[in-house]
Length: 282
Image (cartoon, rainbow, N blue to C red; front, side):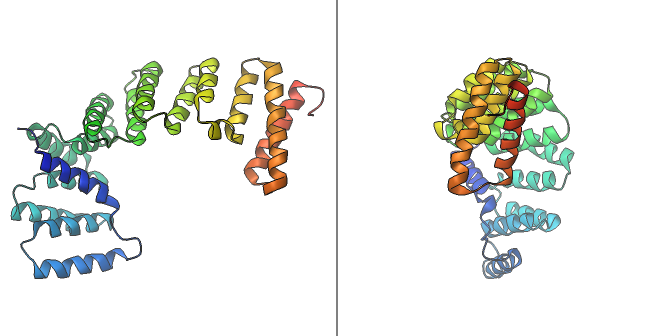
C-alpha cells in the first residue's frame, strides 16, 4: 500500500514545521497555549501532534511520545505520525526502536521520503552504512518529486558512501549529480574539492575551483586554497603569482575594511610561502 498524496504532503509539511516554534515565544509558553487549546478541543488530533512537536523540541521525550500516540488514537488515518514517534526515539538515541518503527511504516508506505531520510540517519548511528547509503538514495529520489531535496541530504549520502567503502569516485559522482540537481550549489563543490585533494588529484581540484561562482572563486579563502594547490603540485611559477596576487588583493581590501584575524592568518601563510619559493616575499 502506497502512502497517499495527502499523507506525504502532511509529512513534508511537518518536516518543514520542525522549526515552527516561535523564536520570540518561549517553548513552555507555546506548550501552555497549545494545552489550553487541547482543553477546549480535546478531540483535535492535530493539536496533539503540534504539542508533541513542541515537547520534542523541549526534549521532553515521553510527553512527546504520549501526545503522538494520542493523536493516532484520535485519528487512525494519521499513520504518518509514526515517523515523528521514530524521530523522538532517534533523538533520544533509541536507534534500534526507531529503526523497527520505520521498517514497519515503510513496508506499508514505501514512498515517504522523510521516513527514508530518518531511517538513513538512524542507520548511520547504528553503523549500518550500506543500509544508510541505500536509504539516502531512496530518500533523495522521492524528495526530488516534491522539489524538496537539499544539499545536506547529498552531503550525508556522501558520508554514507564513504563509510560503506564505496570509494571517493562514487562520492564524487554523487556530488556531481547533486551539483546538476541543485544548480551548482557551492557547498557541494567545496566537498568535491576536498575529496579531489584527498585522492591526490590537484588538477581536478583546480578545475572545480574554477567552476565556483565568481564571488566565491575570488574570495580570499579560495584564492589561498588555489595558491596552495599550485604549490603542492610543483607549479612554482603559477603558485608565486597566485600568492602575490592574493597579497595585493588583501592589501587593497585591508585599506578599505581593516584586518581581521582570518586575513592576518592568510597573509602570514602567503608571506611564508613566498619566502619558501623566492628570495623575497615580495
